[in-house]
Image (cartoon, rainbow, N blue to C red):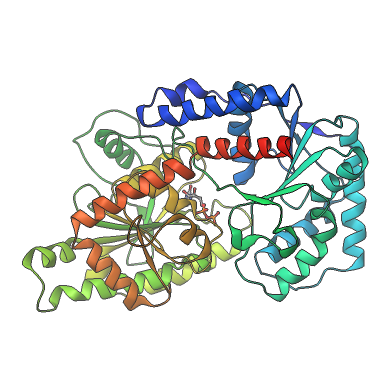
Length: 488
Ligand code: UDP
């Protein structure tokens, strides 16, 4: 068995961020902070350890973080643990689910033996690379045990970064936090995404670092109106001759037809470029709350015929359309639940009146090219009047962050991750119960009627993301956390 040292070679550096006017201040702040921290590190290396070089949010963000940390003068390295014992990853998958509150709340002595054996194997390999004055940053539960052994053997400064959590104590979380206690407690410090996720025994030594988005990546970079239109056309989401350039994407978006067929979404025009649009983009997961959102939208539409509303608002309610968007479940391997949820929503769609079928679009986005998929998400969010994230449970909810960054007003449930991001009435709107479709309908109706509120919520949301949820702010928080360890 060998350790995998991951080389990083991201094309985008600090100067690229600094050239974007709204980001220049954040880059400057980062450089000032680095000027304080880097001399104090005095060449000590910072090791990031996780269990995969590809796939998942952590592996996606690490290359960016490492590139920027190195540019700032930090000697940051990335190493991935592995094992030939595949049952280890089945166990850590169970651990992951238990931290989210799912699964049989039972971990046995056999589980512990397996976990510790693999932790020892990897710790032995890592010990050959690390020095006592290095700083160790271990991500998530898989390498947690190895890091704990290294801490004991070498006495080096150690931080555990846990990217997951649940905001309630249930038997599953009790079982798993009990199982992990001896390893997690060995660390000097922990980092979580929300205070609600911190187990009691770490409450005296943790920092908060929020998940973050990359403002220059294809999903979040600025797009002109022309670019939005061109992407939508290339994805076959709109038919338009108004924009030239760009071949159709390799794979296109599909829309469910009333007869149950999936067809290119531009077969009939949804009206993305000129109608009011309410959108939710998510995986097809029951916990994302698509079904109650569809019901709420039907309620909003029914208000067209009510007396006491202005003609202007009536016209708006007549014109508004709902987009339920997710990845093509046929292209996501190993996601039987995705297909099932898609089926349930398809049946609900086919039961709607023909008028409503015209006003609701169930859309799947191809996943073959990550970049094309990201551009489609970007363009769809930018042409939305309101973005909804009606999750029943949500770890953080980057889809909300992405819309907020684009200045699009967000209506979200009060699920833990979403209430970390949005102060209700200032940075978006929160509904108290994602399954209360009347409440959601009221909030949507009010927001659709009020362009001024939409604008002010969108602007405040953008500022919140700038301060807390961009890669640049995340790096600032990491530098502060490292500095905290140097002071300790
Ligand atoms: N996403 C995507 N294409 C899709 C649907 C979702 O790229 O068709 C992305 C979405 O933009 C976001 C991520 O998947 O960046 C989902 O992250 P989030 O934190 O919202 O939820 P999770 O899926 O991790 O529960």
